[in-house]
Image (cartoon, rainbow, N blue to C red; front, side, top):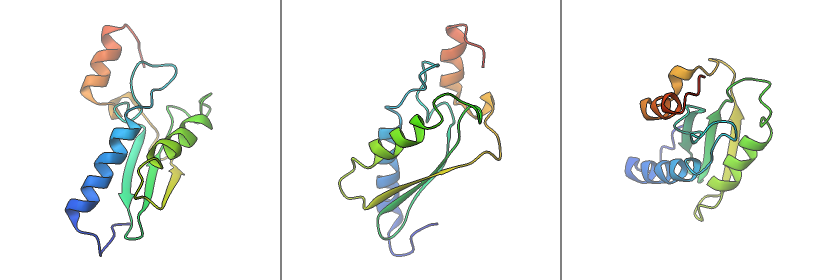
Length: 115
């Protein structure tokens, strides 16, 4: 998926901006943003400024299954230079609590939330 004509610094800058936007989205059932929760599997950007995001949910039957991908798309699309944001849902590998960052796991542990 890597854009050949875009230099690595530019790609990384846009990916980091996308991550910043995604970190503003919290799982409605958990006090952790979805990036640190480990729901984002991959972010890439093409030469034509299309952002490709592969994400999952905590479970296939998650009640926010339609909301979270649309929210990710909406938030990342606020980055002015981008042409398009494509969200691809992935179920393999399935999400597990081990995908969450250490900070996210500690936050949940401190709040006595078991995932």
